[in-house]
Length: 334
Image (cartoon, rainbow, N blue to C red; front, side, top):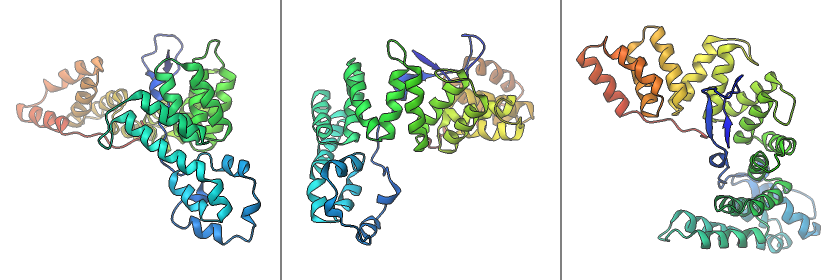
């Protein structure tokens, strides 16, 4: 099943995105709470007048379920009771580390998906939502979707944004489809700033999938995801501004966002931006973007590029091809 990037009036829309399975979030070792972020975390903990030792372990572990190792280490400094209560989650980080080594063949370890899954499950059993999501990803890849969804549900209910996002994506492929549940979890992840969830939520609002169609709402979430670095959202924001759908029409803003997406490797954005440059008389720059789009599989870009190349000198043709050969995409969140 494929997600439509830009909803159209027919199934023949040329705006398509990657399959959903490629959009599942790969968890990273990032802080999930501003309170625990940075080297000053332990000082903030110590500065409180509360009696930390009285917090029940089950509540403590739920609060810290999505913590990374640095955050767990900082929280463990609060008091002896917390250090003991967070021990299982610190152990989970070790299993998570080994799971990633086995999955990706890191640290001199040969890739072994069975050992990777075993390690992730051990981390999940100790309460880490990061391990739950990684285990669910592997379950999904091998076709055990029920087991994957069960782990995503557990991580989502513990407040993990990646788990919430992936649960929403999984529900969009469930049999039968669970669109309303998908929107619910995508919204939860979106509120936490998860850019993939924001983009997928915008698609649902745009298409009226599991929720009433809301073009203004869709455009707002596209913009949030784009500002967070999500390249597909940048492209859609460019389209929104270009046609005035959900956002006030602005060719200047449309060009800005289309260029941002193009510079980060979005092939359709490269095609659109190349056409825009050509219409403005910027032939050399236009050819570079059209060549990049052509290499990425946008066949329509090749025809326009060839027309422009016929108008250039041999020196200019060599120059633009050299620029295309040495082009590198700017970093993005995909």
